[in-house]
Length: 344
Ligand SMILES: *Cc1c(COP(=O)(O)O)cnc(C)c1O
Image (cartoon, rainbow, N blue to C red):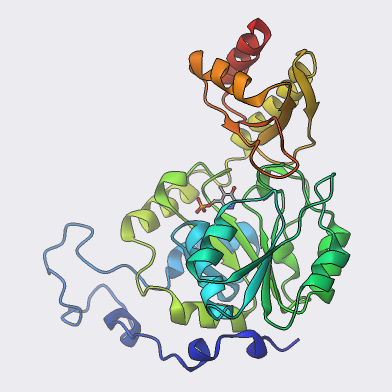
């Protein structure tokens, strides 16, 4: 598959803005920087940040086992998903495939870019319908969004289904791995070499506990990354975010202890939810939340609100009628939740 054939012509032809920090790369603290119209008085943030975030990427590269050349950082995964759409999709002409029930941002971003959306519902066990995806796509269908583990259902998509789609979908396959740290599966970022049309998106917002600083990580071929670099804002990751993440990652590696605690609490909640009489079904989960079908989602949602607990009512999504999505909290919060549910 030749990726060049899928890139928007205007993006292919685009000449990127060259910033002062891009033009002069021999950065060295001893030099006098009079090239970017910055205020010269040092307060820690008076300089523009590194547009390539190399120091941060190097740390993430060590952590994730992917080369910095196969990586692009974004202001949350949301920026990454938007950049990918703008790289491949021509407004008013192209389409993308999404598989509801899934993360709402794919649809919002596709609409923002004036794209046609081909919706193909997941099967009743929340797996992609490969035949329908392939037969309903056409020459203008540029991107397929897969979310694994999927939000809001929690399950992973079967590895063989993903492989089949990577081999046979005639376009870009984006795998959103926002919850990968909570699953047993290996990241698809380990297989970039084999699949030129693969883009993987991860985030520091969930397992890493840094939703507040907005950092998403995109993994793809160097060919794709070089174009994404051309279209991103020059200084898309700010200095405060860069400094904070470097600090956090240097201090503690991956928050393994917290992830383990969350997984233990997940097992605890599943066990306890089973004994609650208005719980109808607990869906399998590889994420830090559980999708639960109850007798009356709106009623149970309101009852929980009255007790000071906010969960998400997912009922408006297809195949999720009367379903609540419950995020795994601290052990204390989980204990409390179960006590309240038992008292209703
Ligand atoms: C939470 C979430 C994200 C994270 O988005 P950020 O912009 O990185 O915070 C991405 N994808 C899915 C499916 C999510 O649930």
